Length: 329
Length: 163
Image (cartoon, rainbow over the protein chains, first blue to last red):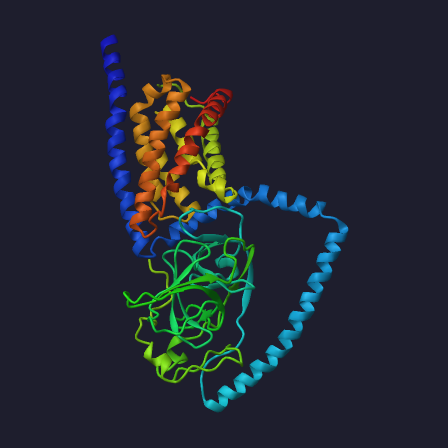
């Protein structure tokens, strides 16, 4: 009896190890399959949504200390500082409202002119939703943010995110109560853009640094200068056209290379944003948007900017610029 | 072995993991963020070492999946890495248990290194190759954090009599 018992004990001592190895092999295989599916397809969104929704209270709790800190800082701010800020904001609003009035007139004029030209570009304003960024840190290698709007509020995969300075990114996982969005600087993100000054079209590819975007495919004789504003071109159908994306900060022409090395800095302060606007609908349909050769001047080009020579933009349509703005996953 | 498992045990273990998950998504300034230890990994190593009959590869895998969802990484990435960590800990738990704290920390550093290398490797495959060696910083952070995590979790285990 005693022997039998010790035999059982021996089994108990050794059995878990083989069980563990088998489990490890099984887990590793399942993980690899999951990762492959998650990397290539979107079948796992349901699983991710379920997990993310369960995690919501936890993430909410995780950002409480940050919120509490902000609240304390706000409460301790002096009355005069608040009054100053209030005055400043009121002035700013007045200024913005004045500009907005002009914009309405310009929009109407634009629509009338386009009607005259029988152009079909849609310049209507987009519906937006304000979303707050949860103070939650995600994987440091991916430029992702978590926002407090989910499918329940109308968020969908692929919706563009903007802030008051420019394009921020796009939603890549929409959960029930939250969504995660990929920033334009993520190494796997590319957005179709054009230069506001002359309409040269290219892509803005993320580099993994918050202050750098790369504009590939601009030829060595391309007309790019430091300080040029880069705006969305609307090609690809994800991002509405005409929003500022970045400003060119570095241009290097190397005769040994077919293309110039152009680096731009995002206009949105991607590492400091707190609130974003989620563009809900009215994403221009690329099919009806632009016949490839009759490239019209950029919609929001400053009136003073000379319109690109007619021959220029078509010459650049071959540079792979028609690649969609999808995240290259 | 055949002791009846007290119901409070599960609650304590789950609570410690939830807390670890919270710590791993807590918003930190960038410099601290670099060194942020893998809290979930540390907690897992502790429980695998202390209660190998209750916490093992399966728990690690599920935990990793939750961590993946929380961090926005590929589903399965942390799951794989943590499974391997749990397996290693299970293999060596009888030895690590009797190590002095500093020696334990070094062993944990090794486990965390494996964890970090696996995660970074998968990141590299999916297009997020690291540009520098900062990706090893969490290992340093984790090693330094181990003594504290160990003492805390041990007290927790004794307090709630988890076995």
